[in-house]
Length: 307
Length: 241
Image (tube, rainbow over all chains, first blue to last red; front, side, top):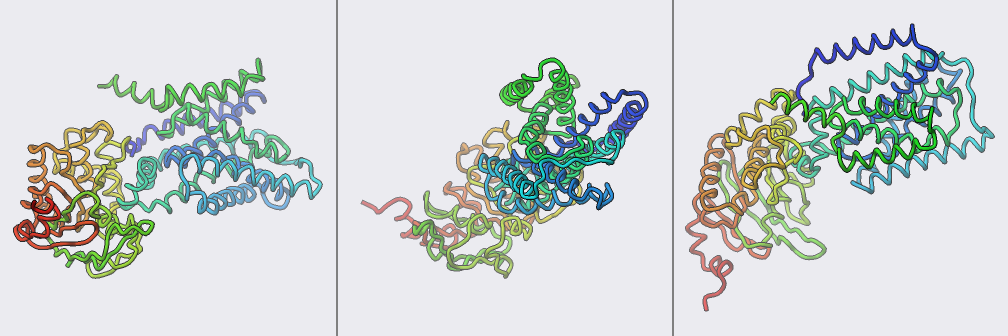
């Protein structure tokens, strides 16, 4: 359990976010709105990833499957459903898929779970690739979706929702149970934690927002192509951001996403070929030397300052 | 009888770890399970707590069978256990360790803030208040064993299963632990079943003792009767030359 929630922090976070959003909408260039949309999306994704993997220790290497599924459902229903309904459907189906595959996946732990989630995302990807090929679709374009400002607002909404979902769960009874699972699953179950149910809840919640974000991302890119929508590097990026920022509180993925999205923007501009290399290098450095991430370091530093 | 173990057998790949063991524990008792390593004591605990399923036989708690229930359900009925090889939640503080049990055990507290307060009180009872906010992995073995007891108490049990909580302690630490067990037995109105091979402590604490040898019960009775029983003496100290 983290310390109880602090109303001042919540209000400060909301006011800051609102100010930034207004500032961006009225003053920023198209380029900056695009950057801010991307930043909000990555915050939403890596916060969601930590809901399962940071809290329970079950590391999902296939979280892109929910993102890709959301994109696919949204493109399929485009023109048939209102945007909000398509996004809601994407989120609901992503959660449904997580709960469904959770039953077999949670029978295994550690590296087996990691491989299984990765395999699942590749499996779904190639199903979609083949279905699309049979339908003679090689990428689907959409016209007349929400404009970039609206997509930006949707992504900010998702980032705020993901942050607070993560923030409050960490301070709740559910969060305490999930930590118990991470620390020692047998001891947790013997202490009364219904581990099977809690793991499914965590998996379902961690899939919800990536599903919606996948749908919203479609309107930013303007087209759907399965190899890109289900690209495993999206999973890797979520993980790297969470690990660099820290997975022990909701601030971690936020810090990690800001750091990496900014870095990647600088690198794409100057040296795009080394982006993935830098990502890998950072991951190694942080896993070995800063396992509790930037947020963990800051929290310890703050503690020693006050002591 | 709060607990009835009824002709329970457990086989692991054909090898019987426990063979047809029966005993009953009256409410409020401190009941001892004695036996050498490999006698099947821990296996019996694991079956009562739901961590293992008996191959045959039945286990009843307050008159109804708990056969086949998951450990968390059994915990919520009011049975808590400690582990012989302690397994605290290492990265959580002592207070968080106990609070988790308060939230999820038989007490089913819904408020994390209240659970943290209750956890503080329990840590106070087991004399861990000074390390309440230390991470469990930083504790000494003695303190970890106490934390194991505190977490079990946090689950608000009626029946507490203690698996070798005295093993590995120095004689002075055993003294303190015996006092602690007496204290919590009274304070929380518990029934305790304890597995131990520290004989003297068992003799002092228990109202009744069952002796196991190679998976079978070979004696049961008051501490005096059991320690005088020639079968027990033979199993424990070997045949006289």
